[in-house]
Length: 429
Image (tube, rainbow, N blue to C red):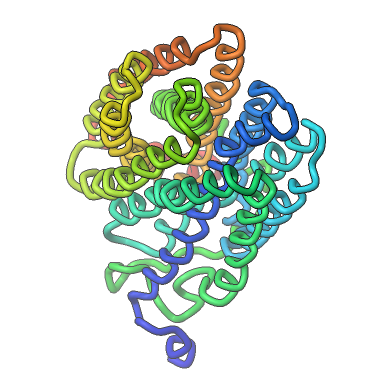
């Protein structure tokens, strides 16, 4: 009881934890969106080409994804709070030190390697781990809310960062991101318990006889992470999840997140106005992803994914043929924004259904790795094709086609309802 009095709100303190994680994910989203803002200012100030800048962005996106499963294992082994504090420190150092860069490899190191490693620990896998540890009910809704922090990060950061870049140059942009990451450190240190039991609580919505979650896992970190991948890859449900999430990354972070502002620049649209369209997408995605979490608690997630990927593919095919007027961009922004990352809650639900609560965070980390491999592929491919062909038409048509393919592939994902549950943990024993 003494421990419980140290924290307000009683059992509802789980929502305080969600709020802290939401802010951390928001900052991570802002950092990942920054290369899209820097592409034109860096080109003007330092003479770097778009393929140089997009290559660094692609490395950051790739490492962001590859860190996911290892981040989940690190959180199981060393704790969520410790990993989150270290990751925010790395992000702050990477952004601050990039203010000194003068060569393309400096960009690759700071906004590629360090940014990717740091944000990879402050990502969707963090949200999945926190939701699984702190909630027994409303998991889809909470996951949708945390996933929507990416949209909110875009909403808050992009217009402001674009304005800073336009009027003050690129250096104040990176220093702003560094300051935001540094300011979150004391907040996490003060408000983030490791698990409900540490403050005398149980998971929100837990039954009276629910078993308390286990403590830190033991064993070799790489063996845990790679061993889980090896076992998961033997089951047919893993690869459709991986492939559809590859397309999710290919069609969002890698293409729109990295190249949308530059594409608008090709049509004479200033950075601030293009960033405003991305911010509008952020508002719509905050609504769409939270709603997707609510729908995932109630409907077949495979059918939701079919709708999400299908509509996304069609919207990407539409954009390069539009007239890039305020009306057409606004129409695309609303339509695409509602669908931006609405795929996360149903994908996590399918992963948990198939692999169980114990292994789901690490398995989902590998699925997210597929997302970021797709994003890195699109970021690099679109930059190269833009330089070679002189426009973004081809990469957008390719991305739209992959969305339609992913829509039909999602319907083939098995669920626990029509297949035996996959118990990776028992196979490991």
